[in-house]
Length: 354
Image 1 (cartoon, rainbow, N blue to C red):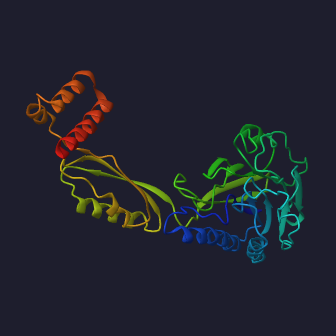
Image 2 (image 1 turned 60 degrees about the vertical axis):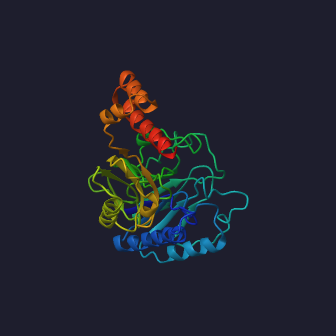
Image 3 (image 1 turned 90 degrees about the horizontal axis):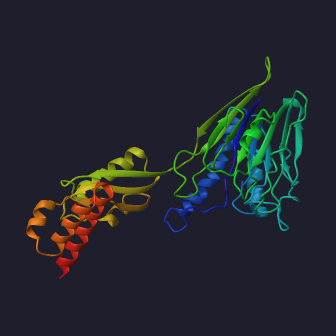
């Protein structure tokens, strides 16, 4: 039995809403979801497991229709879906009365239920959120039935506000696979339990690859589960660090950033960090770097390459000289070194203004 496990798609979300690429990112989340349907067909998957938060909030009927059309395109896979803490089944939820395609089974109850697929001898267990926060550890006592079919648990949670999860208890519960959602970073906990993570990164802190879990459970000579994470996201958030030296000009830094973005992928979204020692007369033009691609932020942590001995000799009788002497007498290590660089830069800027 072959399955694809996804979670936290967050259809309707608009990452980086204040950036020029926000509208494109909203469309890409839908594109990534549609791509999963194509992957299911290509892999001839038996099940598509969706472990909560398919939508960023409780969906509208028109959104459910769009998703349902996608499900109708599945050639071999059946869909099992649960509502998570974002798209929970509240009083105004459209989920309970929606007419899903025949390939789709949605857990609607807030307590554990199951669905059995006889042709693949597989039982899937799950529940849906009926409120945003659930603090009870609902999965701590769940167990599969004792028969020899394949047993899969669909679960959403893992923090104190959203169904706390005891990983050891779940691993020991006896399921052949536990398909987890809610944590956006993909993580294979064991061959029988994993967080799929979000399909697309949803904010600047979600660095690293995003995608889905492809798994297969066989019953030849005892049940065996094999899974692997597959990257499928259209973009990634990445942090790029650039080490400068006293010879690095603004133009040189700009060229360095251009080349690196071309290598890493112009579709990705970047945080730029400048570090190292620059010529004391140079101040890097951060605004010019924003024009080079999808740049979220630029941080300049470089420090001027001061000749402190010469500075001290030239300023021994004023505040600059006194500051250098005091720091050298009372501090050592990285913190003292940074205080010396930043303090001198501030003092020199003040002097130059005067």
